[in-house]
Image (tube, rainbow, N blue to C red; front, side, top):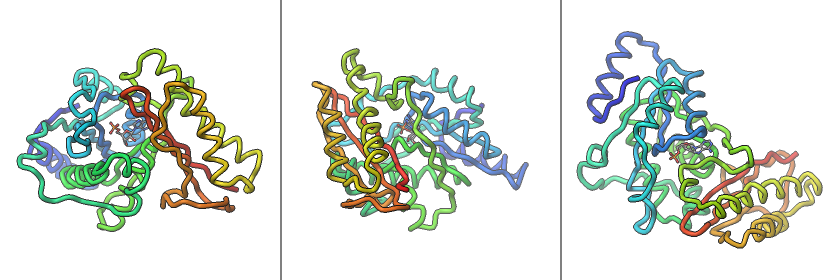
Length: 288
Ligand code: AMP
């Protein structure tokens, strides 16, 4: 496994490898590091499907708000490289902020519609930061396939829209959410939780389970309003949980609906604060 910090080094390496093997397919996994099994599942999928696997580790300041956790975002370069090596990554791109933004960017890629609700509403500018850095990374790596986790289902919807609208020559591969044995979705931010918060954070997956059960019991008679009530009730069982949003929408359009229809794909999506830590989780359901 090779690690590079500079864009021109990465470009040269990729050029050399493609010259050796013109049919080479490149799989790309963009991350912010502090890697866990969720990230590893993306790298492993890329390993299975592509000749060359590129991982990027970059905590992108552009996607953090002024009062968010950019400064204290957890970092562990050594451990990340071990995890990447075990997952079969070939090339790690590890740029500094100055390498990606030598001067303040005057070009922003902004996807309207799908980026506006949920996390887009509670984190203004977040998805502009994401779509801009992903565009830069796609231009640098020029991958055939790029792997994203459905843990960030809205991010997947935003990136798919961007790739479609701008004719980017890359296939987006959405990958399932990886969870702890007790149901908590893996996240780099889980390390912020104290013991009691970690225990109570189980209400997120419990709320998604409750909504899914409600649909199984009621079938298409279940309404979006009832589902939201079931979810809020479940989260209400935690005294520490402070709901940022709890919504039921169509997926990937992320539009509200009143009643369920056969063949519809919906998402139950949550963002909940425990102290200073904001956790997100979701489930995508196919309505029969
Ligand atoms: P991040 O480092 O948080 O920006 O995440 C990098 C990529 O890993 C994104 O595509 C995330 O959706 C994905 N990811 C993060 N956590 C998980 C998880 N628990 N399961 C699957 N994918 C995940």
